[in-house]
Amino acid sequence: MPALTESKSQRAYEWIRDQISAREFGPGYRLVLGSIARDLDMSVVPVREAIRRLEAEGLVTFERNVGARVTLVDENEYVFAMQTLGVIEGIATALAAPHLTESDLDRADKVNRRLRGLLDDFDAHRFTRLNQQFHAVLFERCTNPHLLDLVHRGWTRLSGLRDSTFAFVPGRAHDSVREHREILELIRDGADPLEIELAARQHRWRTMNTYLASRQR
Image 1 (cartoon, rainbow, N blue to C red):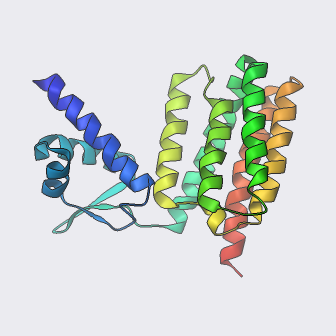
Image 2 (tube, rainbow, N blue to C red):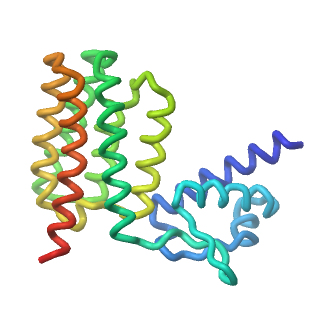
C-alpha cells in the first residue's frame, strides 16, 4: 500500500507541475486538494504529498486560512532563480562537455537552427521550449547526478516564475542564438572547462540582465 500511495503522489506531483508549467495553473492559482483529487481519481492524501513537494521546490506557497497557491511572480525570485541556474547549469555543461558526442553536438546545432528559424516570425513560447531542448542536450551528460537534479529543479522553478522571458524581451532571442553557436564552438574545440562554464553562465545571466533592463525603462 505505501508503494501505491507513493506512485499516486508522483503522478499527482507530475500532473500539477505540468499544469503550472503550461500556465493552466498560473501564479496565484488556488490549489484545491479535493478538486484535484477528483480530477485525478484519487484521495487527497497523495495530492497533499505532491503539493508539499512542490512547496519545497518553491512552485507552491501555503497561506494560512487560504491554503496552497501557485507561487506569485516575484521579480526578486526570478533573479535568484536565474542567478542560481546560471551557476549550476554552467558547471553541469562544463562537466558534460567531454562526454558529448558529435551526434549530440549536431543535435544541439539542429535545434539552434530551428531557433534561428523562429526569429523572423517570433513565437516566444515555442522559442522557450526549443531553447530548453538545446540546453538539455548540453547538460544532460553531466556525470554529477546531484548537479543534474539541481539543474532540473532550476528549470522547473523558473517555468513557474515566468512562462517565457523572451515574451518580455524578444530582441534577446537573436543574441541568444548567436551565443548558442559560440558555446557549441567552445565545446567542439575542446576549450578549457572553466571557459565553457563561464560562457554558459554568462549566457543565462545576459537574459536575466536584459529582462531587468527592460523593466527599468
